[in-house]
Image 1 (cartoon, rainbow, N blue to C red):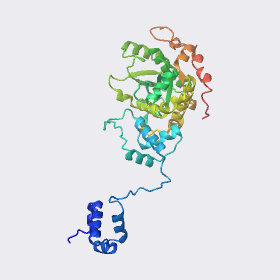
Image 2 (spheres, rainbow, N blue to C red):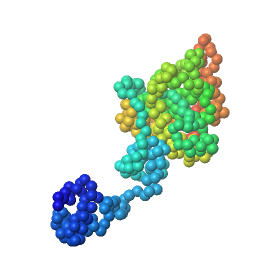
Image 3 (tube, helix red, strand yellow):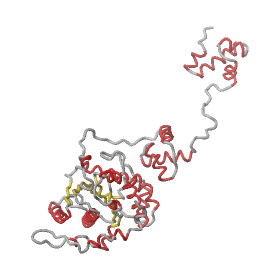
Length: 384
């Protein structure tokens, strides 16, 4: 009888190989030893093929003490689909939100095994740097922008519903120093040019109070909360702010890539602050307290790997620059602009009427403007 060797047939099909054993077994009066000798296999293999199933048995271990529970694995899959994070960022996210520390390799295996799709982003290569980062003086170049917290695109649906239910602030105002990545933040319920001018003046007064003496150049977009593309308003604002050594520099239309640094910081707000902490706040004060802690974490503890940073925190980059600026500049209080408006007005009162064709700055309200450091001193719980 012309028989294909068992081991060669098994490489093709394990089921066919066991059927062959059964045929030879029946042809030899069900003699296990003779069947094993003919096919060149062990008697155990013959018994397995004759009395067991034709298919291969599962090689899955019966016990796996180190395997994650199904509940935890489902949580990883759920958060991966909701956030779009991959294994590295998802590992940090789970630790920050739930206090669960899971290996990146474990998360990577789970995502691969469950075929969780990854979000792709188009990037342009070969572009020039926006600044000469190595030669920048700290607190000389800034980017200014606002973030709509309820844009309903960046965060999970339940976060938006929670923020609307408890009437948390709707807008975030950010100014970021390009050289050190230091951020100055405020919040509001409305978006208007009044708040835009207030926020710019507030940050600049804070910088000047802490011995920042160099000219300040602020890059901003053409939103209605700033100059809104109006040459007249831009000229007026620049005239008023020129006394403080400030120049506003709007970007051209549709050139959002020029605001890349602050846009990236907004993405970090979504991933490390709003996604995790917004649902834990049920009052405005709780939200502002957590916002203050997030800004302090950003400025003092969060390392940055962008150009010119080399893994340093903003405070470490500032310290390495050895400029004669007070380190308390990093303790900028995170404020609600509506509260500030009730206390000191629109900040236009700081600028008197034109004298001789120029705006004149008055310091009569300067102490009122800087009251906020004492008012919100309870928020600043850290001593640096």
